[in-house]
Each structure stands twice: as structure tokens, then as C-alpha cells.
Image (tube, rainbow, N blue to C red; front, side, top):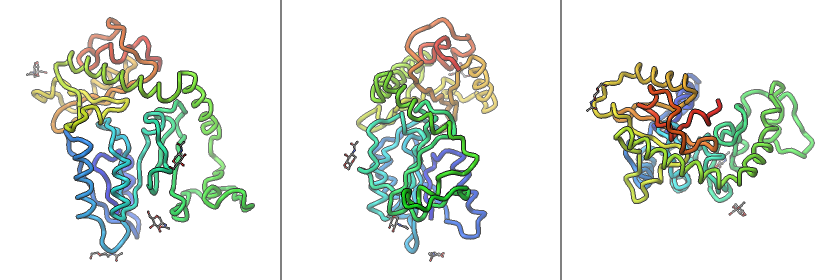
Length: 311
Ligand SMILES: *[C@@H]1O[C@H](CO)[C@@H](O)[C@H](O)[C@H]1NC(C)=O
Ligand SMILES: *[C@@H]1O[C@H](CO)[C@@H](O)[C@H](O)[C@H]1NC(C)=O
Ligand SMILES: *[C@@H]1O[C@H](CO)[C@@H](O)[C@H](O)[C@H]1NC(C)=O
Ligand SMILES: *[C@@H]1O[C@H](CO)[C@@H](O)[C@H](O)[C@H]1NC(C)=O
């Protein structure tokens, strides 16, 4: 059985559903995540859900994010992994947004089963570069979907490493960018500085945006209002109040933003419209008069200063 969080990134969710075409496939259950919420509420509901839904006669996997893409929220994923362990459920963690976005990730301290992150999202590496962690006890379960063209039987590399060693068409340049990217992070003061800067920027910028729009930030309903916020923030759009904007109009707004060289994800949640804004080292709280007036509805120049965004 596979239990998948309702906020799973759509392509990952489609991949899971595509498994159903295979002769032997897991049954799929969806753990619904509702908003507004808090870390403690997510944990309580996740625990209850696993207890009542996990398979009693087979292996259950739980698939969830460390940081959800839409809405852009930080999940209490380390505690969710602990719940999985306590319930005998294997954790399959989509950490695409984690590396470069959160510091102090020490996988040896967390008893997870599978974890995968993408270096192109927050680590300044080009697309197509990921890191896969599999707990040593589970490595025999993993097979690469393409047969590696080169197998190294000399004992220097483990069978698991050989499984992924070289698939012929791989672009080695991509992996070679990781070290320079880490050096770049160091040159800016290190990952902690970057993450702190981006977090503070989106919290400040998000407040400015919400104030300008007369709306609100998506905050936790728990004791720490900012616990859901990493380097992305979700701000309600004014149309939320009477919901007159159609999805097509939202799409057009996104296109207008792109014309202004700004990308921000627009989405609908609980019948309201929201924008997800990300903070990066090349954004700053400044520059108030350089934005195309049509964007002001959605985006204050403080949040995404166009003259500093070089796409
Ligand atoms: C587990 O039980 C369910 C329901 O009783 C059944 O449909 C399924 O085939 C069983 N799975 C295994 C692996 O025995
Ligand atoms: C990660 O955790 C392990 C186990 O607790 C510990 O031995 C190791 O020193 C930690 N690594 C870092 C870089 O903190
Ligand atoms: C994988 O890890 C789980 C614990 O999470 C363990 O029960 C299982 O034996 C491991 N190995 C395989 C091949 O499933
Ligand atoms: C409702 O939407 C219309 C058209 O977009 C807008 O002019 C009006 O101000 C909105 N009303 C409220 C209460 O937000």
C-alpha cells in the first residue's frame, strides 16, 4: 500500500497513479491535508491516518514532502518520519525543495527509508541534478530504471553505487556543478546566511504584499505562526473576497508576470486565490517604482524588484 499526502507535487502524484497500470501495483490512499493548519495538527492527523489506513497484511509506504510546492509550506517532516517508524510504515520523502532551503539536514539522525532532493531548486545547480538517499538496509530494493552501461564489479563501489554509476547519456557537467555551487554559497556567507536572508525577505515582503493587497499571509494556526514559512510565502489575493477571477484569468495574470520577468505561482485553495512568492539572494526589499502597473495588483515591487531580477 502507498499512502500519499494530498499535497504531493502533481507530476509525482501522476507517476504514482501511473503505477496502477502495472500488473502488481500497490493500492493508493490519499492522506488529505487541509488548510489552514499547523505542524501539530498535521502530525496528529497523520498519525491517526496511518493507524487507521495502513495495510494490516503487507508493507505500507508513506509519501510526503519536506516542503510542499503549492502552497509553499514547510512540513514537520522529521516528526512524520518518526511516526512512520513507530507505525512500521516506510517513509518515502520528497525533499525536492530541501537542499539549499533548509540547513542542518543530517539524515543519519533521522531514521527514514528513502529521501530525494533536487539541487536545481535552491542550490544554484542546473536542472537534472538530484540526490537520492536510501537507508543502507533498503538498498537492495532499489534498481535503476535504465540498465547502467558500465558495471564495476571490483569491490571498490557497492552494488547500490554500481546501479547508478553510468548510463551513457548522462550529462556529467550537471553533477560537476555541485562543488562550484557550494563554493558560491560559501562566498555569500554560507548556507545559513542565505537561508536566513531569504526567509526574512519573504516574511517581510509577504507582509508588505498582504498589506498592499489588503489580504493575509498563510500562517500556522499553531503556537508558531511562521513555522510553515521557509523561503516561500503564500499571500491571499484580493479576489479571494468575492472570487470573481476565473482560473483562465489567473493563468493570464501568470503570463503577465512572466512578461515582466517575474515568476510567481498562482493557485486556488479553499476556493480562494493565492500567490506563492519565493525569496532569493538576488531579491531585496527596495525599488518601488519599476514594476509594470498591471503587476501591482499581484506583486509589490518590494517583493520582486524587477531591476534586480535577471532571468
Ligand atoms: C491483504 O488483505 C486485503 C484485504 O483483506 C486483500 O485484498 C489483499 O490481497 C491482502 N494482501 C496481501 C499481500 O495478502
Ligand atoms: C549527523 O548525525 C550523526 C548521528 O547522530 C553524528 O554522528 C554526526 O556527527 C552528525 N553529522 C554532522 C555533520 O553533524
Ligand atoms: C527496509 O527497511 C525496513 C524498515 O524501514 C525493514 O523492515 C526492511 O527489512 C528493509 N529491507 C528491505 C529489503 O525491505
Ligand atoms: C469583487 O471583484 C470586482 C471585479 O474584480 C472588484 O471590482 C470588486 O472590488 C471586488 N469586491 C470585493 C469586495 O473585493
